[in-house]
Image (cartoon, rainbow, N blue to C red; front, top):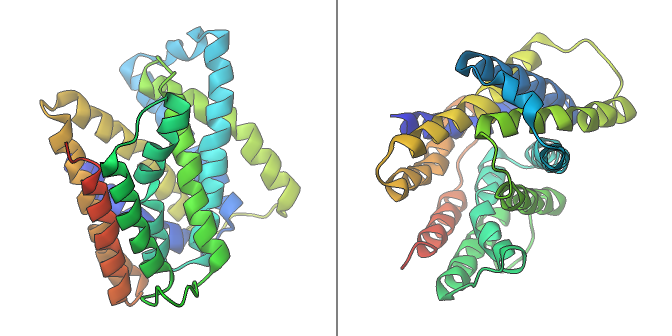
Length: 282
């Protein structure tokens, strides 16, 4: 149930991003959603009786949090929100979903892991799907809907993968580590906001969207997923639930955003998910 709740909530965030970006710029959405998420994580730690652990980190752990906070939420969500601002949700969401492929490739030089034929096959199949989606079903034309938006969506997968690779060095309680990361990212977010954006009173609809994104995408989903992985007897079975997310997301995009789902989007998504399945071949 925890895993299904996390997947269901993750399926709504592409729609929430697009609706919120109708009222906010990407940095405004990051500032307000990050603030809501930080407050939520603080409340969770307080409820768990672990808030004191925030002040008991080592110097190296605080330094790691500065680096992790720079990667996510600052760079990752700033790039991702800009990609969603430029692309239709039905394109940005599947492209961002290729981060698992990127992670396996970056693990080779950074974690000294070997890459097998499964990863190469997954790479080939998944990025065929990327091309189909990005060209709206005209893969041989190589005429992308928005080349810069496509590039940003793919760059976000690199940033997200680097975040998780570096996160393997973090031995703290996951919620404690995430909270400190968000705190350390706040100066970067606020500085970029003040440097690039004119200060204004945030519109109510934008704040509602930011509260949803910060509470669920950045906060509760993470906690639900941790609980699911902690309680299950089969991590593989739980992790397979994540394959439901992009298909459910298309339903929300169609009904709530009113985007007409192109056949190319569905076909490309099938390519991407097939590639992710190929990674799991023993």
